[in-house]
Amino acid sequence: METVITLLAGALLIALGTRLIHRLNAQHDARIAAHRFSDPYPSLSRPPGQGNPGPPEHIAHRRPTGSWP
Image (tube, rainbow, N blue to C red):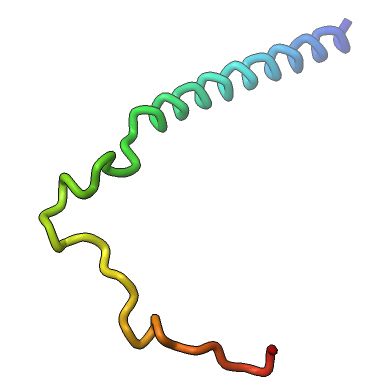
């Protein structure tokens, strides 16, 4: 009889833990869906000329070095 009670208590704890994890995952998914990761049109929100700069001239014309052919 004690074994049956122990197994039922273990199954109940597993079910409660599964339910808790499921609810936490749903809450996390809702937070991710509500978060804005980037601007949809960054060119409209930044003034002209304030965008991401390109690579500097000395980096753009650099040749690879080393012994690889």
